[in-house]
Length: 254
Image 1: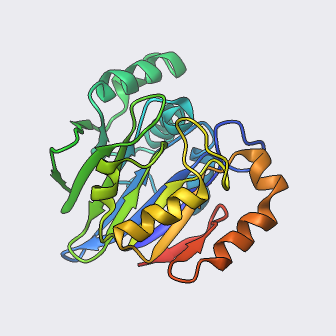
Image 2: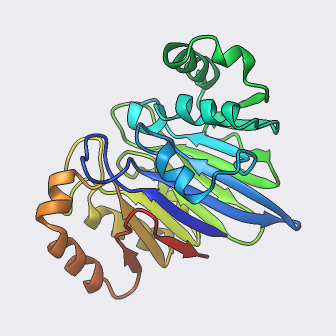
């Protein structure tokens, strides 16, 4: 399993693309490509990695804030322009079908009716595992201002946990247990904030989950600019977990 950090920024970051993770793996000899969240600034970064319209198999939307799904109409538009034919699976909490179709109609009226490839939707709910593309998907609600579902994806060999946005909860703690990598939003280094995690909380979260690799993303833009040295020092001081602060384009092999 390969994890590529297309973006690591928050909604209003002027330098870093919105947080988005591209997971590439193989299941029974077949390549599988999954995009986790697709905010305003994600599609151009994705296209720098691949221009193949058939590459992506699935899009997962953690919640309905714009920096996590507003890039979807542009992504779908280019797939149409470049003659994609393969179905695209879109997973998200109930309402995802209507949300994506409405966003498409607002951004590019009439294009949604002539995409040329099927959009297939799966509603995601905590406690309801999904088996799709040879992967096992499980979900749990985090503590965010807008309902957010963290996701655990297993390919039969490796396991990825992606938080989306929000504070760790007892349910996401169980969901993350034993994963090979936790990718968790961390809005601040150590200052608690409603609806968002801190780096210190995320490290403790990873410890309790028994996970040895933690990637911290979605720092507030001023935090990342003004305290990046302190954030780096904090990460290096953690001796029992490999803590990384990825940059756009960084990749990890699990």
